[in-house]
Image (cartoon, rainbow, N blue to C red; front, side, top):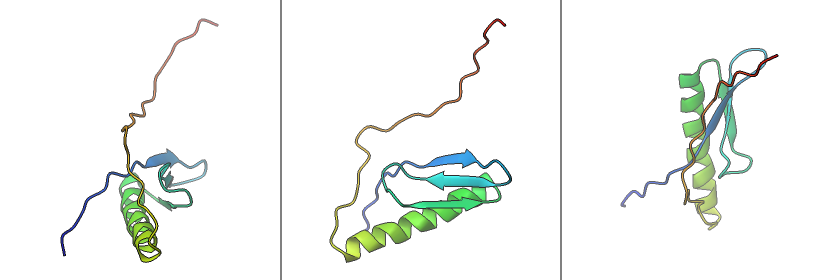
Length: 80
C-alpha cells in the first residue's frame, strides 16, 4: 500500500512548571507533552499518527496545511 505524507503544523510551548506542551492547530484535541523539546516532538508525532489513524478508521477527511505558517519570537525594546 502506498504511503501518503501530510504536513501538519504543531506548536510547542514551554510549560510554567517543567517540560513542554504541544498541540496542532490543524487537529483540534490532538496534543501531547514531554520533559524536553525532542521528547515532546516525538510524543506529538505519535499523537498525530494515532489521531490520523482514527480519522481514517471513521472515514473522516484529513486536514491539510494550505498556507504554512511561521511562528517567531521577537524581542522589542520599549523606552521606560
